[in-house]
Image (cartoon, rainbow, N blue to C red; front, side, top):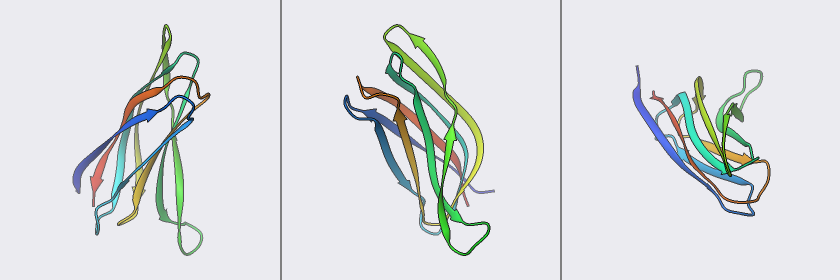
Length: 125
């Protein structure tokens, strides 16, 4: 069993922008197993977010490493002029020793601002 860890990303997309990107480094000498991804994102009415986590791992069929993008479903709760997007997903995503984990939140249009948080949790091994 590894050491339990988590990282909370604070998401902000300014008006006129479409994408939020951020990274967190896996501690040197450790690998990360992401076991849960969850969050709450507030967007202007009519917008939908696309939430993904990017990790690096060895390829199955050939030598070397490659990044993989993992997408997470959201549930939209409209509330007047704001959409509230909620996500929560158990998973088993492995990130290589000493690599970084990226979070991307994209949205369908660029009007208004987007704010929220997405948390990844798991174990360092």
